[in-house]
Amino acid sequence: VQLQASGGGLVQAGGSLRLSCAASRSIFSTNVMGWYRQAPGKQRELVASINTAGITYYRTSVKGRFAISRDNATNTVNLQMNSLKPEDTAVYYCAARRFGVPSPDYWGQGTQVTVSS
Image 1 (cartoon, rainbow, N blue to C red):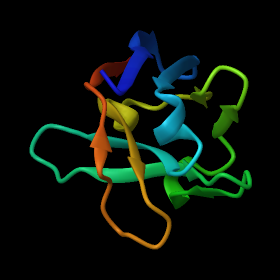
Image 2: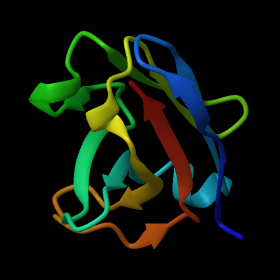
Image 3: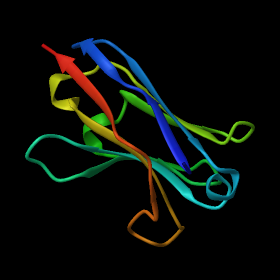
């Protein structure tokens, strides 16, 4: 398994969750790491990403609430999710893509995040 996601679960609105994704060193050191999510009946969307220089991207709806980080010592990318809202409910996927390429080459298994109102 090249990308192994963990975390997720059920939380009340306003709560927090932390997702982690362990990657193989070869993937982690050369790719933009990101978290995507897919809610029922909706398309998969990019939530946040971080490149090898630590530059981050967030979709507008999660700015100020989510924080993505990468741990170069453990080849792990984390997504800290605070002030969660019911609309954040989705299956979250860790992914890795090459710089300049729009679509990920590697996907982790999904992890369910459910936010109750």
